[in-house]
Length: 267
Image 1 (tube, rainbow, N blue to C red):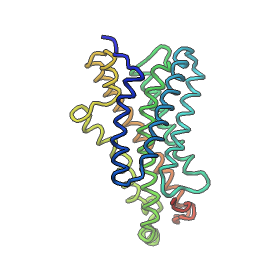
Image 2: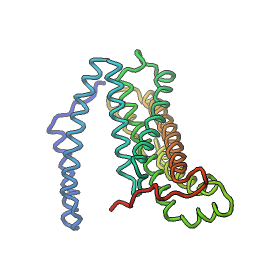
Image 3: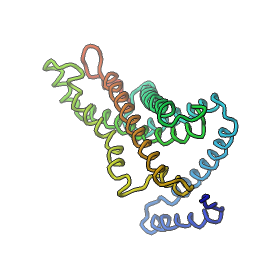
Image 4: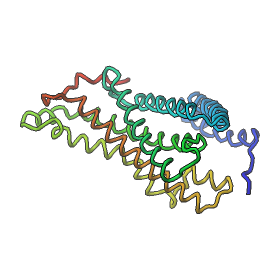
């Protein structure tokens, strides 16, 4: 069964639901109506542009254009990870660390998926690589940004405890271990929660999209399981790399806490 096409009018009818949120904002004096309109307009513009770009990528089938698109996505993901941190590492370290962790982890996971599980021909086929990358990248971004924000905030808050452990002879890794564990748990928890409720509570977007497009539900389930495993792997690797890098940056070889390497709190 072919997918049911949607018209601009169909989207406009669904868009009327935003009036409910706008009305709530006005009635409760939340001041979110302008932000809501701008966010919705930005979403429509971005998705429309992405649709045109993907159409060209699929038609051209160029490995270099596919790589360029993937690189742009990773760089924007690094920027978003930076924007979500309350306390940033000074000197561009937060951007570099976040981008490197997200990009490296996602690249490894995507190569594994494209070369072993999915095996498109060619293996870098943009029709498979870019949508899968977007799903994995978005979740890795959330995990890394949460973990880094948790770690840097905890380092400031628990400065006395960290320095006490260092004064008692602990190494920088021993002194930062409780914070590292907390940051890792925080970064991984959204992915764990998502896996726990997938299927029973929620039907994820990829699975729903495939079913609406006419795919067999059994095949859609297999793809969704694969995606959740990829997301879990990329998030875990990214969170681990980012937090280990942050701990190393917030301390030095003489086992001292270096909060001077943190920027000021954002307002």
